[in-house]
Image (cartoon, rainbow, N blue to C red; front, top):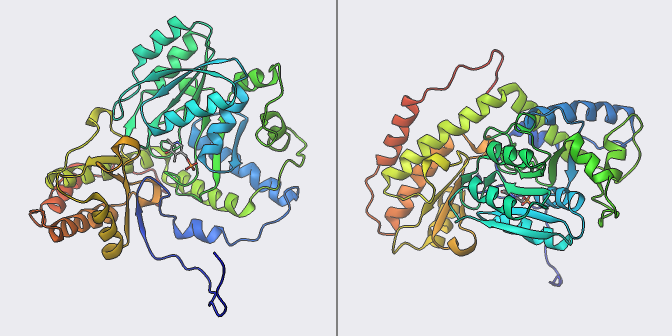
Length: 410
Ligand SMILES: *Cc1c(COP(=O)(O)O)cnc(C)c1O
């Protein structure tokens, strides 16, 4: 677009929103404030000292002792690409589980790496079936890598990462796990479950700044990368080169780190540590139960069975005859509230409610239910005012917060 003569230019002030979609999630004022701290040189001793705090906080979030645990510059998709481009060499067979949108993206990246994906499909809205994975491994004993999404944001399903990683270990395979939406919001135990490579994103349940992908690699995974026959096809994402900055006694220049976003991620991780990982998981569960009770009282149906439901993202079917897009438009216009649409084939049939990180709060759950009631009523849907809030209130009363760790500020 060309600027017309006389076009008035001005600073961009984003409208005030409450983010209850599939990410990004709301950032806490402490995290926002951290972004404004001045960047300093990446070899400055003060900066290195700061990184020495950032990395243990990330290890805590991942529940790992892995030395190779760091935030990669780039969104979650770059984390996905980093894991695949390093652990998959041309010709390698890779079992890829696809039960939603992001599993499909993994298949595409494996192909671009020159790998041969063996796709294990499950229906959108269902978890990955471990029996199918076992069968795929029996049929493809030469496959050495299994990739799957722990928390499928496109549907709101959690898969049994522990069971899938155990299957991989028994067959001496490497696991690549997408924990973009699970990290910080639902139990994830990288070491205990024996996961080899795991990536996430800062802007979902960590409520950090978009643009960083926390990643972690086991010693075994690093050895596999070092033993590759051919160089990694991406210079930027070559793990061996990246570890020249992140690992070892002497840090050498790789690329200029986005210092401000590191500050913000650090603040977000600090807040997670202050709250306690388990308390954060419990908070996400509680708010989910209340939201679910309220949505149910509104007569909405769920895509996912509660047994496989993620607490941080809930998909509901749009009622017949209701214009899904118009509801979202009005939520924006009347309440500044963002919720998500469906993805892929489910695009126009679903709404997705995200309560991730700092967005996972009681006031948001109540606002969302009230907003939805009034918007649906405006569009001629018969609703009983107050039924959703009342159901949510009862769910909160039935599930009091678990005892908080001493010193918790949450
Ligand atoms: C959001 C998301 C991604 C991609 O993250 P970006 O930061 O948008 O690149 C990958 N996997 C899952 C499960 C996600 O929810």
